[in-house]
Amino acid sequence: MNVLLFIRPHLGDAVFTIPALRAVAADARFSSVTCASTPRILPVLKMSNVPIHYVATTPFFGPSSWLRLYAELCRLRPVEVVSFSSASSPLLLSHVAKAERTACFRGVPFDHFATDLVRRKGPANAEAFLRLVEGIGVKVTKRSYRSLLSPPADAAERADCFLAQNGICNTHRFVLLLPGAKKPYKRWPLGMYADTAVLMKRRLGFEVVLSGSRTESGLLQRLGSLVSFNVTRNVGNLSLEELTHVMRRASVVIGNDSGATHLAAAVGASVVAIFGPTDPRYTGLARSAGTVSLRNWWGVICHHERCEFRECLRRVSVDAVFEAAVAVARHRLSQTETSEQSRSEG
Image (cartoon, one colour):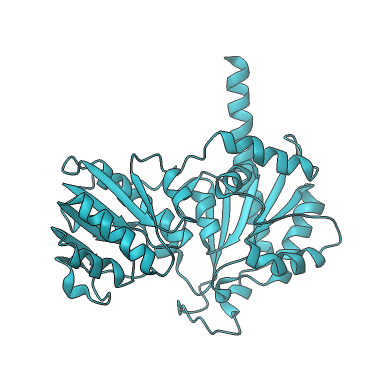
């Protein structure tokens, strides 16, 4: 029996999928595991080091993707399908291709085509995806959320070159700020990011690196203009693999509830994540000793995409973020010193 997994085309959701992906790959019932997702997500899946095949799709399952996926499903028969997506296309394709079994979350359009429906409690997260694969009989023996991803070693040299070109050597300590988020209502105010950057620079002597996608170039430019010193900006210049090495090199990463922040936690970076209208108990970081999730519980968990006030985010103070960043950075530096000492003794 083969299995095909439809992965949601969002960075954070792809990270949350990894524990379920490992559980499926470890199931002896399946002779092969295939994942279908957008090209942007495939590097994340490859960094999981799970032996799987990949099929690239367009974000909205255009005609070419339909034909490619239908051919893949027919080639894999007999096949079982797990759709992590909220789109109807995977269910329609599975039905037409006569998949042996199809699992999805209850409430997805055309869910009557699925043989196994799983009720999702709260937002999509790693636990919800694990319950979904359990719906097709996969036995989950280890619910581990640590060290989800391992970046390829060849990307480290390119990441170091990027930092060196911007005056950041191996001995320099720096903070990586991720001020963007796909949904603007999740973004901590830029002025508060700027105040935090000033504190990290003046009190700790850290260099400041800003990172975001090409669509967030204006956001990074505005943030850079709010501080009186030079900052390093990565505006889509690095691949995901290279960016993960920069995240691991950073003394601390500070970001919103975004895909990039979840990626940083998944590769073992030291992270301070700022939550506002979302709940870290459901969409929190991969569990690790070097991560901290901050949220002011004054507001309700509204997920209100048109909120113009974002009071819940403003009540997460600059001092609280700075103190958490200092604690996380100290933990990271102590770990680094311990590992270096053990290597010198060895």
